[in-house]
Amino acid sequence: MVIKEPEIPKEILKEINPNDKNWRNRPLKANFKNYDECFLMFHPFLVIKEGHEGSIKFETGNWATKREINQYCQRMSWTEFLKISGIENYIELDAVLAFSHRARRIGRKSQLLKYRTVIEKERIEIIPPQVDWFPEILENRLMMFLETKGYEEVFIYTDIDEKNGLTKVSDILNDDEELPSHVRIETPDSKVLVAQDFDQRFSYILGPLETVEELINTLNLEGFYCSDNTPEWWSYREIPRNDRITWEEDMKIEI
Image (cartoon, rainbow, N blue to C red; front, side):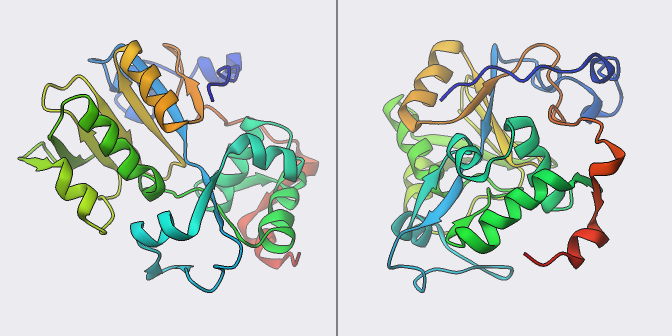
């Protein structure tokens, strides 16, 4: 599902500079200059299938494997989570997620409480979007799509590594190990790149418009196309003082 890109406030646009030394202050397209389109793909929520709550665990140091996730979970879109939580919009949801995994120091209390009520009380079978890793529930689907395009191998590297050697797509499909954090998945001809960055709940799908569109439709992805000014912190907004909450305050709240 392709949504309209959220409007970026003028005060944020003033801080965006394609030539900034800090890559986080540059538009996303300026960080990936060799690609026509950049689709910001929301990482989906996961829902543990009914009757399998005891079959899979999502714990630090004991995270579910790709096989377990695909066997025991199904996807939930951000659109659906907005409906069941009452959170106002995609901007607020991304901001809540960022605060919840401590990527931002200040959160919006009214929206955070809606989020925590669903996750911790009403629908405990829902797992928040994966951060720092490309979603395992989409990994094999992505690889099978690339296979249909004739790619038998891809480059697998990270934001701090250089491209070094190709990996067989079939090996990735058969491997239960997760891909590296902050991964780059690039076709040998460099026409398609999938990138995931530090502390983010989304990935970037980059390439020719026709290929990106087909990938979105085939994998049923959710997100928006980036404009020339879209920054990675597209959801940042000033929070009214009477609705602010800190990490320390958040930890004291019981739902």
